[in-house]
Amino acid sequence: MAFDFDTKYPSMEDLRAKAYKKMPRFAFEYLDGGCNEDINLHRNTAELREVKLKPRYIREYKGANLKTTLFGKTYDAPFGVAPVGLQGLMWPNSPEILAKAALQHNLPFILSTVTTMNIERASELTNGNAWFQLYNPAEDTLRNNILDRAAAAEVPVLVLLCDVPTFGYRPRDFRNGLALPPKMTLANILQILGRPHWAFNTLKYGTPTFETLKPYTPEGLNLKQLGQFMDQTFSGRLNEERIKPIRDKWKGKLVLKGVASEEDALAAIRLGFDGIIVSNHGGRQLDAGEAAIAPLKRISEKYKDQITIMMDSGMRSGPDIARALASGAEFTFLGRSFMYGVGALGNKGGNHTMAMLKTELQQVLEQLCCEKVTDLPNFIL
Image (cartoon, rainbow, N blue to C red):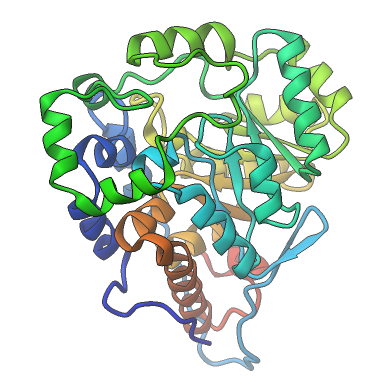
């Protein structure tokens, strides 16, 4: 089965190269970079691609089916849109573009606390199917207010983020004076002038802001002030006592994102989470850490029958998704990949990237003679 996408951009590297030409440097570097020296950013994809799959050609084969059931809902493919902060800064209106595309392709879309669309709009655009990722507030009143908003918007899955106890050290962002709105240095102004399509769309859709946090955030913060505010107000550092009231209050499915060890996976089971997303935040938090595929394999081997195990970080293609699923993930999420698509192709980027990934993944299953994505672990070498 082939899905409809623009054959001028048939790979993620094509989209990344096009996005680089259309986005201001400060926006592209925020999207593309990791932390410190980008070691774990590159390790993620490199180690994932060491996973090899074994085809079985001489057998009865009825065709491949990408449909995957997750938390009682059947999606058209085993991947979704990971939460990404500052989306509207990287490409104007991008969270809306991706939410609409996710609905059209019947894929899950996760909204970040620190992106540029609010909970209510995300729910509206996805017919109540958007998930929400929570940066845990330091104050219980603020936490409960955000949870009440998510519940009122009928968010089916709350994703609690655990891997941002402190914000990653990202040299490019410091050099670029990244903030909302971006600091208008001469260099940034020249970058914007050189990207007229981005500039026009920013004028059209307005200056991006943290829409979900708008009722709580002072205006006009620079990078240092923004970091201080986020550290004080949305402390991501979690322990069991801070998680328990969230589990008690939230009536929907609860997922812990950022799990990178067997110990945290076991804690998630003990605390009553419905699922975990094994992730190292796309290599943006701990440069000295493992590639996400390494703990995924260990966690899946120990706990696959006790909790739903998902993965993000490092995937850039259909073969990468297949590698993660074969290694024990039941579902996968991609962040940068969809933003490359939107940065390259604007309003068409979400649909293009989802269709391209579906086509790539379908081809892998057909080449392996694998009928269902849940059978992929049987094809790993």
